[in-house]
Length: 76
Image 1 (cartoon, helix red, strand yellow):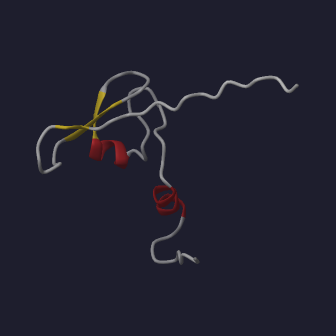
Image 2 (image 1 turned 120 degrees about the horizontal axis):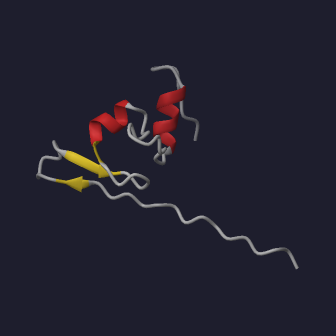
């Protein structure tokens, strides 16, 4: 029987929206528990500027980071 493996449960971080227009979005870091301004988090490539925690990236975000603008063509 193979040894049982415990899967690490991903830490879900829910943005805290402070107004209806989503202009002032804040995200709480899962590691250091500090609030980070959403735009600052994206400018820092979704890495916490305080503790270095890496937030999850979507496939589209990762493609945007790696590929030069205007050169990616999606094949379905």
